[in-house]
Image (cartoon, rainbow, N blue to C red; front, side):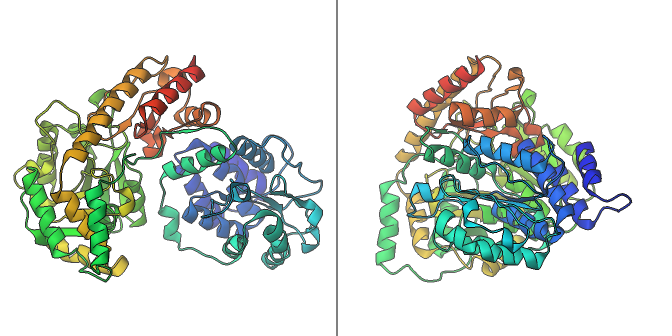
Length: 585
């Protein structure tokens, strides 16, 4: 990356070789899909590693773990390329604060930027998108007059001597009373300061990603806290309540004493109910002993990849796709291999391209239908072709079907590789209650595994989550065995919203949108606007009050697209469409 090399050369003394820390930052920057994040990592983190590596490493690890903003920057030459100037400008744009406190005169060795999320029960003015800048030099630089409480910014002049880690620790100790009394809710600063100076994460944490939806949500909440309206089209969860009969089943279970440990793979009545439900809905015939219940469906994904993908093994996954696929594969030490989903193919897997990507190291293929973020759905012909490839190359398939019930296509029903002879013995079915029954907060998922995988997956559950909460499993039984009307009504409303979203987007100059076949996402092509996905996403949020996600949040093949969730009211969807139109015309 030329700009990274130029920056490193600017800060590195002549003749010095790149350190392992700098090489790690180079890798991190080059892998960043979001241009906004790439710029920050490039200009802020890279320079900080050269100015003061120990502090930078600690804060970089905290940033990777928390997903909230936490960066370090060093002071370079004045001007627009100065990391401090870039950070100040970006922060101003991010928070909408126009009257930022000017930077003090004198050399600034380090700047710390911290975003503190809201705490339960705390008033908005105490926590709304809190950021403070600290230029740390000698402890004598700490002066109360440098704390600007109205804007919650802290700007400190620093001495010209080199900042050492013990000096930084003393500086942070001196600053603690200011943070306590002027900037942060009680005790919140202790956690942050402790992380700055003591937490050291394992290297593998640098390979673990996150979901950008929650980052966008945090920015949107900050805008709302400032008094502006935001239409939320970024978060992927049904905006419907859990059906009353499901809630009542959980209450009854609690009153009956279902508050203790239960078997790791799930209580027998629920495993039986899952098997019966799958057969009743025509999806597959399976014995209960192959069903494993987990707190949410993500553990099925995590456990499968950890159990099957070793160091250097290759895992194929859809791109654009759910970002956790790539994240977990990388975390496991395996090699993520993106399988492009292209608009010209209806965002379905091109099986010819898929087969060309397979090597002798390929171990696992992940597919998702109906699909997040594209809303596409595999056809029976697609599934048969994918199954033939898996059988030919001895691949195990993880089929993510959490949106199976939310489909709109005119065809005969949900298509799955599990329908193909020979596939149930090499396929893991991932599903759950979150989307079908509007139960995202209940954290209930299940997997159906080939017999040889049940014990290893159960062992992973025992070593991590122990079991899924007892009372919630009785609610899960009620969902599977209860009336289907709430699901039908929800899907019908999603279909109505889909039609409104697609029609509205296709009327906006520069935007085209295919009709989703399932899930509750539209994935419009925005290349006609002449803007990148990240630029348009940021513009819509800050100027139009519409929170959406950029296509590259789901992989590099998502560039040129946005994801809009229509899990919102028709009134809000129409408002968002008009706001988008106003921005682009």
